[in-house]
Image (tube, rainbow, N blue to C red; front, side, top):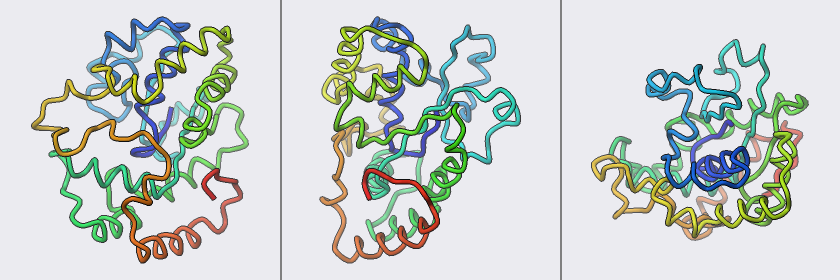
Length: 248
């Protein structure tokens, strides 16, 4: 699975393990999501001996397409690439930067917007990340899905993911997975809401990690001037992208 920051990573770390466990909730109720679906770029990945884990192995990464290891292009594992309206990515990131003490403080919304648009944030430019992975859109080992699609029809999205993973499940199991993966349920799950992370790293009194779980929250943050600036930048950066985004 590949994601940029604040696009639905935690959500997919809940959905995919439940698909492979055929709806058994034990993994998501007993294993923190960062161990359940480890990050390839994290130093802990080596400690977890990921190469020794039995197949199917599920990992997550923020890597840009061009940063993937040479073995990725040889093996061609299945990839679920999650996208989200960049204005909502910005909004979620702005709040996250405000509560994560290991990150540089975001400053004002205007200041953070400059950083976001120019890729001066953790994991770099949203625009470059998305455009890089979309270059591979004709490859059948990559499945693209939008955060907004999952918001609108979670059960249907889970069904599509099971089909891509070639892991057929009964309608009853898909329903069970979808019910467990709604925002309210995940927010109450300490293995998924990052409440196990010490406050010195994430101060959720400032902003909860699982904050709202909605589409369109950018409208509560952006000023008219910021919206115009963002739209102009987006139009220029994405003008050559032949892909229909659900938020356009």
